[in-house]
Every structure is written in structure tokens, then in C-alpha cells.
Amino acid sequence: MFNKKENALVQMADASQAQLAMNHLSGQRLYGKVLRATLSKHQSVQLPREGQEDQGLTKDFSNSPLHRFKKPGSKNFQNIFPPSATLHLSNIPPSVTMDDLKNLFTEAGCSVKAFKFFQKDRKMALIQLASVEEAIQALIELHNHDLGENHHLRVSFSKSTI
Image (tube, rainbow, N blue to C red; front, top):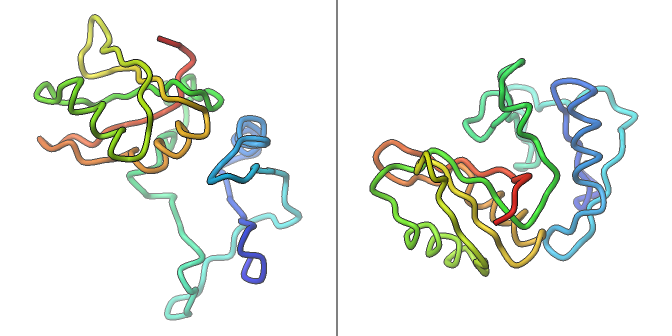
């Protein structure tokens, strides 16, 4: 939306994913503004042609490592939850401590209220932040963060609380 910089078109893989995104994201606050998600009259996002300037306004995420729910039928689809102040962290290497993760979120401007590693699997943890808006911003900023040892942090909203 070249003339409306506060608007965006997002193309999902299918209609059910688009509906889920609208249900979960409409009404949420992001960077101090309320998100409003609706169906577009456009059927697809037009990517710029080869060599055509796009001013950095168009991105194709279909093959991005940031894409958590790419594989159809993946068990990840059962773990799509609406935004909450509690985030699920995974792909944590053994050398990373609770303090390392709390500091990472604090440095990203978050106020950490609680933290808990999973009892049976220290590769996963829950972190509770001060607000849903803060959790949304943390997910945007820290999903796929390089934790070293060839591990990139996976961040998603949790159905659980601490």
C-alpha cells in the first residue's frame, strides 16, 4: 500500500490461516496503535518484478527462517495461540541460562515478570512479560535470535501461564 504507509497487505497460505490471523490480531496493540485486520479485496500481494524498485515496502516471507508455520500438517499448527503476556521459548541450547534469557528480554525493553524452564526439557521455557503489547514486540524482535551453538530462539505465544 504505497500511498498508505500505515496499512499493509499480508498474504497467508490459505483462507483459514488468514481468518486465524484476523481473529488473533485484530484489536491488539502494536507500537502504541490498535491493529485492525480485515480481508482485502486483493487476492494476492504483487511482488515487484525483477529489477523493479520497491522502496523496501514488499517482502516475500514464503522461504524465510522466520516462518514458524510453513509445513502443512505440522504439529506447529496446533500451537498457534492468540497473543498473551506469556511467551513460549524453544530451541534453547544447554549452555544458555535463565539469567541469559531474562537479560536478553530486558535488553529488548521488556519487563520480565516470571520465567520457568520446562521441567522435562530445558530446551523450552515460558517467560511472562508485563503486557500483551510488550510480548508482541518481544516476539517480533527476538524470534530467530541467534543464541550461538547453531541455535536460533523460537518464540511464540503460549496458552499456558506461569
